[in-house]
Amino acid sequence: MSAPVVSPESPTSAASAAFAALPTRRGARTRPFLAVRLDPVPRPVLRSLTDVLAEARAAAARPTAPEAAPEPGPGPAVDPEAVAARVRPVAVRVLGALAEVLAGRRPLRHLAAVCEPELFARLVDELDRRADPHVRVGGVRLCAVGPAAVEASTVLHGGRRARAVAARLEHHPTPRPGWRLTALTVL
Image (cartoon, rainbow, N blue to C red; front, side, top):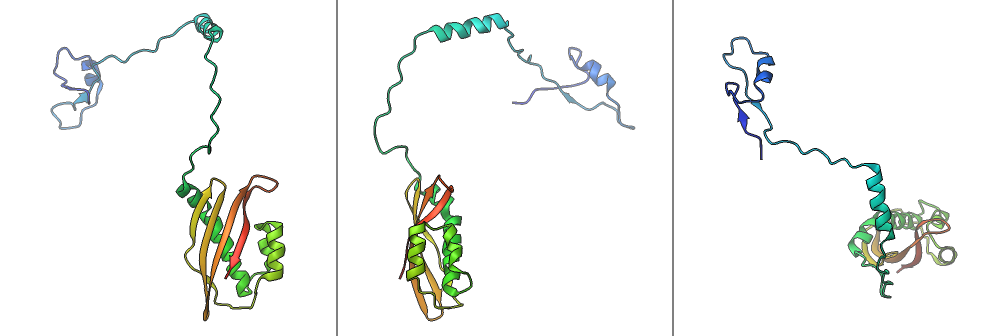
């Protein structure tokens, strides 16, 4: 709610002195209206430091109820959409790098940074890397299966062939924090 407007002619106006100090425009007959706050502004309550410290000591001396131990359960609720949205850029980048490896535009060793060592060793042995320069990634679909695990799927389109890809990314806090590719299937 706005404060009422007080006219300069009002005899009870607390702002009459302020109106007199305002410059007038040349040719203007009256001074502009000024909004004045009529309700008083509350002042903060100041207490002495000894009173504040005495209250703090009294509060610390009061016995408190023991905290209940958390019940075992599945843990805090996880919003799968939020997890998937957070991991989507990583998944798109990893699957794009895989498409470039399959197209022959990127060496396989570039995937070593985002793969688990066991998975990378299996990829070196099994991955069919016939150069198909027209491989591109289709839409990436994500499904969060927990707060630290996401499964991704896509279709790699290329030339006369399309390949389905399923991948699992897990968040590892140590030794190198980040999302790592832990499972990969290329059909």
